[in-house]
Image (cartoon, rainbow over all chains, first blue to last red; front, side, top):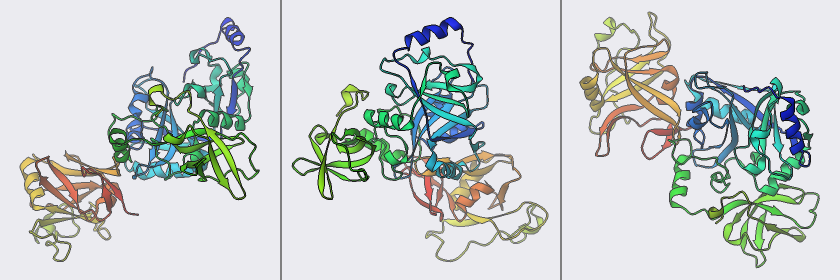
Length: 328
Length: 156
């Protein structure tokens, strides 16, 4: 646990810099699971797409890691963010795992199934709260965000993309304005809107278990996968696709110019080009934003969804945070 | 073989003769069957599972095991398909280990958790061009596995 004494001048300087760009803090409805034990990292290494040894390599390594747990067929099951809580390699590994709260029981069952004799304990952490800290209009420097008091366990950049700001783990009931002075507590719906605008999938609605494919879900763009680590569940199809296949479809942010009917767009709705060719499927969204699995060849064209009675038009865009050379 | 059980430190089921029947692969690979039972003075309930050792497995073990070494088989979570086999030579028996009866001098030990995943399997020592190694073959609990054979998934 890192606690730095914050001096008044540092705070004042920081608040001045952020005056016109107040960060917004969103309470997230995601669950936290604690995985502790001597074999915690090794245990998770065989279950997740990313290299957990990087998380626990040293006390200086970034304390957050994005990964997916796949099923044997190589399809996404759960999207998780791992956080390292222990300070140095001398201490017993203590890893927090963030997941969609609606599948907390399934994630626990999944971990326990593969635990067998590993020296790890797995337990939920209801005493902690998870927040997303999204910067305002001005780009912020993560290191300039002070960590204040012992109410904050961890404040770290979101490992997926810079546009997602930071993740904050604090004790439940902590006063956020003491931890991050000047921040505004926002509505979590605005957080989801921000995600859909940027095209960042999160949770089982965006990544249906057993359906979504990791590479199509931009796992590689979000720093969630290592192609140089050893075996993990679902690796065969993923490695084969990466080395030999071509990724023709990806999750892209979409925008509906006109307000939608109150029922919204059903998940899985077919998206067509103007000429009626299949372009992809709608995945999830809120308001006039959403994400859809679209064929990259048609992503730049005007698109529509045929609902009973009428047609809804939409357009897709390529997120700015995608690697430039790979926007194909 | 029948007299061995009275002097064995692990009373339980006597080492059975190789089972006749459809389970036996052609070519008489099957020689020794290790049935696992609770170590201890009292005979416990039904056996927790059987592991079969092929002739080549016993032969190889007798070649490489030194002193009190035995072959330990463990099942770990992870690997391409969810679970993977791990073979090692060990000398330490733990309270939750299940020891098979000696098959011609070769011993296989499996802990009780791993035994649940491999009971009914056969351990073979297979020599191929790509590698020579101990392999778990014909595991009745296992479904399709990964191409290299180390990892398997479980039928539910």
